[in-house]
Image 1 (cartoon, rainbow, N blue to C red):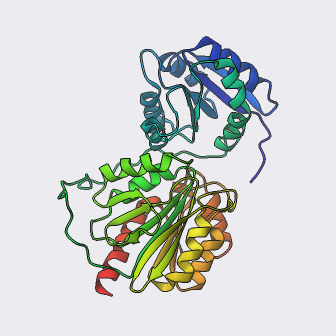
Image 2: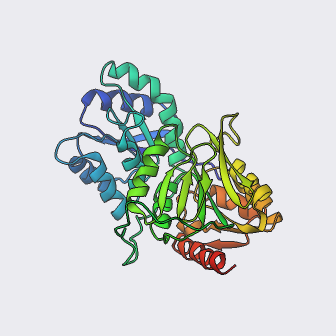
Image 3: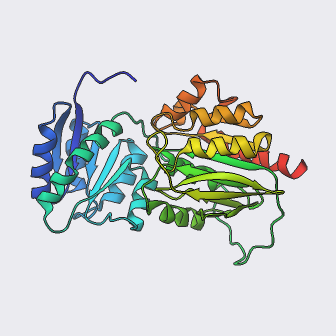
Amino acid sequence: MIERSTPIRVFIVDDSALVRQVLGQYLGSHPGIQVVGMAADPLYAIDKMRRDWPDVLVLDVEMPRMDGLTFLRQIMAERPTPTIICSTLTEAGNDLNVEALAAGAVGVFTKAKLGLKQSLEGIAGDLVRCIEDAAKTRPVARHALPSGTEKKDLPATPALRKTTDRIVTLGCSTGGTQALEFVLRQLPPDCPGLVIVQHMPEKFTADFARRLNGLCQIEVREARHLDRVHTGLALLAPGGLHMQLKRSGAHYLVEVLDGPAVNRHKPSVDVLFRSAARHAGSNALGIIMTGMGDDGARGLLAMREQGASTVAQDEASCVVFGMPKEAIRLGAAQAIEPLSRLPALINQFCVSARNG
């Protein structure tokens, strides 16, 4: 990736004068960052931003006149901009984290209610790194679902689902929360079982899975050790743990295990994809989606070498093209497709599973 020759232009929106002062001074002193403006609420911010649009937005949630999430959704619909949420409300396990990521935020930081100055100084280094990563992303406007894809009323207790020997594996990182929602909301209840790695911090994944489960026709939940994979179910790897696929007779199950980070990530897409290559082979469909870095590229190649169908999301529809780009470079992807085509590919795999 080409290094930037100009500073990253950052705008801070926070109703606390102390937060604006501390973050403004710290970020402004960094040689690779230029603070181009600050505002106490989104309505003041938008007027200033239109005169000098930033590369990255640092945004509070709880503010007068308009809350940060409403502003984030407005920005992502009208002029998608890499946005980092920094709030006292985004503690681990809080649904707000998932809402922010689903709305398009590329990072979430928590500032303390007490000892605010010390808290901001404590996260400042990580915030700088997140800003540097955010500046490399390319957010896309939130996709509208095609008509007829709204969640339908489903029975409280689903009928027993038949076993399938087909499996779909998905891996993604930055931008993946929105991309996964777009894909999963369009899958029918009889689609093959899905196993998913989305790079997310520990305790975020359970909330994210619950949110998706409320939106989708299929069941979506955080994976547990030795969960069986079956038709109409999507299992999301827990943050802070690896997930790998195993075969037990005619069925698949997942192992959720601790261990060292792989490609700097836990869960790692490579861990999942390599296990799918070993245990599913040609019965698997592997899809690598938007994300920074190269996690999953070599695993997707292993899947292709074992006869799996493999797909990489195309550059135009990715927030960050890093993971798919590396997979394409290695020759791991049989097809390169836009996000809008992925549900149809999985649905075609459904038909193949039912007819095979």
